[in-house]
Image 1 (cartoon, rainbow over the protein chains, first blue to last red):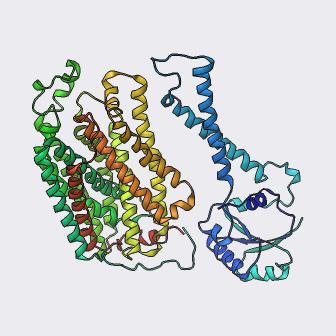
Image 2 (image 1 turned 120 degrees about the vertical axis):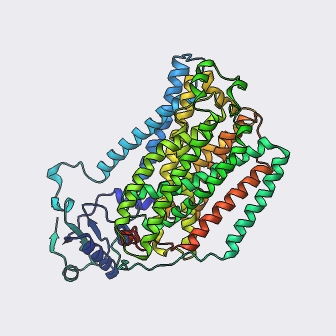
Image 3 (image 1 turned 90 degrees about the vertical axis):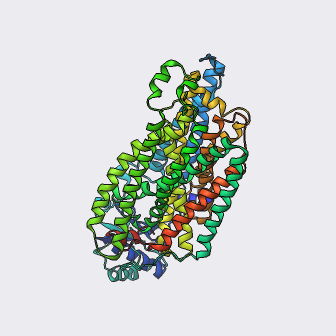
Length: 187
Length: 402
C-alpha cells in the first residue's frame, strides 16, 4: 500500500546532489549493473531508459506511482459531475418528457457518465504528470539537461554521490560493470 | 522480456499432467450421477429438462469452442507469450467431437423448446411481415443440418490444428506452425460468421418474434470471457501441481489482464444491447427484457452485471491484484458462474414467465456435461505433454514476464 510519506517524497523536487552517470548500450547491461549496484548497497539509485524494462522497478525498489490515485479521484469526480449535471438539466432546470420515460432515466445517462469520467481522468493524469515530473519548467531553469540519446537508444544508471556513496568507489564500480561512458553531473 | 540471470535456455519437458485415474473416474461418476438426476427431471417435467439440457450443453460447448478460438487467435497473431499455455485450450477443445453427439441428441428436445419447429401453421405469435422473412430460415431440416454442419467444420479445423501442434512435440517441424497459422485464419473467419448464426439459431429463435443485431456478439463476448476464466483456473492448478513450469507466473498475470479487459468488453456489449432496445422502446423488441425483469427474474438480471462486470473490474483493477492467484481464482469462478447464469437467463424465461430457480434437471444437466467436459479435457492433459516443447517460440514464451 502506498504511504503518504512516499507521495510527498515523489512530489518534492529532487535535491541538487551530484550524480554519477553510467551509460550503457543495451538493456541487459543496464539491468545487470542495476542488480549489482543494489547488491553493493548504494542508496537512491535510479535509471533512465528509452522504454520500460520489465522488472527494473523491482530491482531498483522504486515504489509504485501514486499517479493512478489521482486518475481514480478525477475519474470518479468527472462521472459524478456528469450524472449530477444530466439530472439537473433534464429533470430540474428544464424537465423534458422524452417518449414518456422518467425524467431521471439512468440508462440514457450512462454513456455520458462514462465519457465524463474518462475525459476528466485522462486530462487530469496528463496535467498532473506534467507538473509533478517537472516537465513544464522554462528551459533556462533546467540545469545540466540530460542528453536526448537517453530517450532514444542508450540507457543510463544514475547513482547520487553522498556520504554513503563515495565518488571514487562509485566510479570504479561503474567501470567494473562495463559502463560505456562515465560522467559526473554537478549542479 | 526480462533480463534475469536465470534466463531459461533449454526446454525441460514436464511430460503429461500426472492426474491419478481416481480423478478421471470421479468425473465419469459425476457425469453418470448427473445423467440419472436429469432423467428423473425428464420424467417429471420434459420442457424443464430439455431447457436444462440446452443451458448446460451450451455452457460446456462454449467453453470447448473458446479453447480452439483462443488457440487460433494465438497462432494468428503470432503470439510469443502464450505457447507454453497452449495445451490448456487445446485440451478444452477436445470436447467438440462429443458435443457433436449431444447436439444431435438435442434434436429430440427441439420440438419442445422451439414453438415454430412443428410448423409455422401452429404458430400465431408473428406478424405476417416477420413471418414471411423467417419461415425459410427457421425450417426443420435446414435448421438441424446447418447447426451440425458448422460444428463438423469446427471439429475438422480444431482436430487439424491440435494434431499439428502435437506432431511438433516429437520432431522439429517448424513449418507446421506456419501451416497452423493459415488454418487459424480460416477457422477464425469462418467461426465469426457461423458462431453468430449458431447463437441466433439456438438461443434467439427460442423467441422467434424477437430480434437483436447485437445478439451474436453478446453471446460471443460471454464465450470468450468464460473461456479465459477456465484457462486461468486450469493454468493455476497445473502450475501448483508441477504440470506446468513454476516460472509461468507472468503468463497467469497476463491472463488476469485479459479477464479485466474482457469484463469491460462484456459489459459494453451487454449494455449496448439493453440500452438501444430500452431507448427505442418498440414493443416487438422490449418484450424480451420485460419478461426478464418481471415475476422475480429481476433478481437474476441483476446478478449478471455484478458477476460479469463489477466483481472482475473492481477486484482486478490494481496491478498487484493480477499477481494474486487466490483472487484470480475467485474472479474466474465468478465469471464462469455468471456465464452459466447468463445462458440460464437467456433460455428459461421464454417458457417460464415466473422465476424458476435451478432444479433437479438443471443440476443433473450441469453435473453431466461438466463431468464429461472435465473427463475429456483431463484425459487430453494426461495423454500429451503439457508444454509444447517443439514449438519454435517456446523459449521466448518460457522467458516471458518477470
